Structures are given as C-alpha cells and as structure tokens.
Image (cartoon, rainbow, N blue to C red; front, side, top):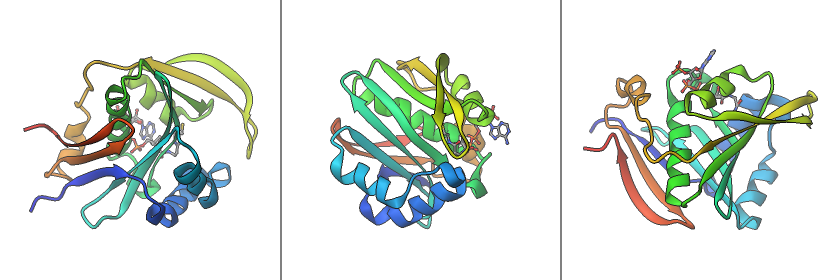
Length: 189
Ligand SMILES: CC(C)(COP(=O)(O)OP(=O)(O)OC[C@H]1O[C@@H](n2cnc3c(N)ncnc32)[C@H](O)[C@@H]1OP(=O)(O)O)[C@@H](O)C(=O)NCCC(=O)NCCS
C-alpha cells in the first residue's frame, strides 16, 4: 500500500507527542500539555487537528478558534526534523479547507515579527499584514503581526507536488468537528 498522510482531530491521547513537538518547535514560548488539554476539553470554540504519517507518528498539528464567521489559527507547527518538506504548506491548506467547511469569511492569525519562515508561508497563501500587536509575545518579548485572508473558494494544491515523492498515497482527511463529519482525499482522484 502506498504511504499516505492523514489529517484527523487531535485527541487527549495525542497530547504527549503534541506537547513534545510543540516544545521542540517553539522552545520557551510554546504551550504546555495542560494548556492543550484545556483547549480540547473546556473550549467550545476550539478545533484542533493533527497530521500523522504512515506509522501514525505525529508530523505536525494546528489549532483554531472558530468564532461566528472567523477562524483564528492559534497554534501551528511541523516537527523540526520534518520542516522544509512541504508539510507546513499542506497543513495551512487544511486550515483554509476547514474555514471553507465552516463557512468562515476570514482566517486570521498572529505571528512573531521575526518569524520570516512562517510569514512568507502565510503570504504565499494570500495572507496580508493587518496590524501590529505591541509586545504580544513573551520569552522573548516581541511584537506580533496580525495577518488575515478572505477564505478562498479554491484551495491551491500546487505545494502537494513537493510531498508527492515521499507520500505517494496522498493525504487522507478525516474531518469531525462542528462542521460535521467528512472523509476526503488529496489529491482528488
Ligand atoms: C512555519 C512552519 C509550520 C513551516 O512548516 P514547513 O513544513 O517547514 O513549511 P514548508 O516546507 O511547507 O515550506 C513552506 C514555505 O515556508 C518557507 N520556508 C520553509 N523553510 C524555510 C527556511 N528554512 N527558510 C526560509 N523559508 C522557509 C518557504 O516560503 C516555503 O515555501 P516554498 O514552498 O516556496 O519554498 C514550521 O517552520 C514550524 O513549525 N515552525 C515553528 C513553529 C512556528 O513558527 N509556527 C508558526 C507560528 S505563527
């Protein structure tokens, strides 16, 4: 069987690897395991997904807050040992697809001003700088850039070609959230 990626909802069983990945990706400014647990159990607006590989290993994740017609990307990371393979672009496409499914008009996020990799990734998907949030971050203290994009009608899958050699089976998406349940496959076909 061709190796494939899977996107599925984050569960409490994922929290150890998620907290470990988060600490390696964000260092001292990351979220604690307990904070993630609170998002999964005590926050009706939170929708969190994980990206796993052929051995069910955690490759990345994202977390969103869904408020009326806005989706806010509140956390997002790829395993540092797997960065640069196109997985971040793929996960961001999943965020945009989630926004479509939830009928959100806009997707917003905040990013450290010095995080040029993430900012260039967001720009490549149409996000623009909307505001500066002074001293938003600590460890170390830094301004945040609020970025936003209108939810696209079509998600651009051109980045998939970078991952196609490693994941010939494509990406299976198992959506299960306040937008309902749905199984999808990328690329379609
Ligand atoms: C931001 C992040 C999710 C990107 O994930 P990734 O899997 O490395 O990204 P991709 O391989 O899909 O690359 C996407 C784009 O990022 C940029 N990029 C990736 N690695 C880069 C690098 N080392 N230097 C410069 N730009 C880079 C490129 O613009 C690339 O686009 P391209 O396809 O035109 O080359 C990842 O770097 C990460 O987890 N960082 C730590 C946590 C973080 O900062 N999260 C975002 C918080 S707002």
